[in-house]
Length: 71
Image (cartoon, rainbow, N blue to C red):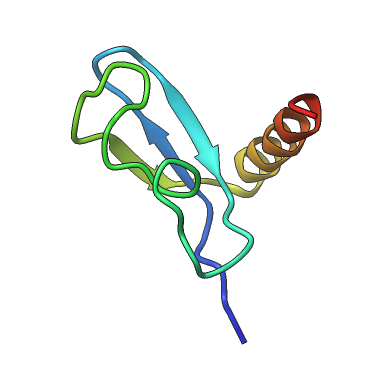
């Protein structure tokens, strides 16, 4: 049975881009569930920390809303 990793918050110190991800599976896709460099400015490495429950819920809700609006 897959066990998803805990939610993480990524932050770029150069351009202040940030994203909170709450993976639904143990399969992580670069640029969607995990980030090694900033998608906005290309800066690497990013600051990363475990997200609290509230931030994870908001991040997941924003991902669902973004996917819905792309239709």
